[in-house]
Image (cartoon, rainbow, N blue to C red; front, top):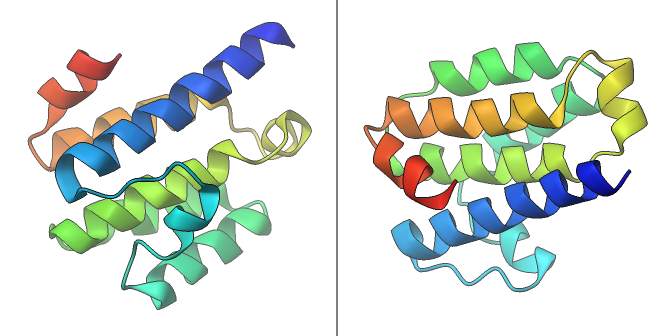
Length: 121
């Protein structure tokens, strides 16, 4: 339990730091994440897939998005959303917090920002 809480906090702080560094978004409150993307339709579709347990499908759709700043922001908010899911939900749908970390790392690599991940890890 303690280890999972630590990993959850680590993911949350990593996403917050990246959003602050790249987009100057201060996410001290979770509501700031809600208003920090302009592409609601994409984010809502990804969340809906995740809520139905189709997390891998949502991730695939995420990585098919064109490379632009707004989609990077959307991806980070999506991983933050996944991180807020209970452990039981993730386990039930064959997903883990380590996969969330891996997804963040992969999305940053897609945008040639893997050094940022390494610096924050």
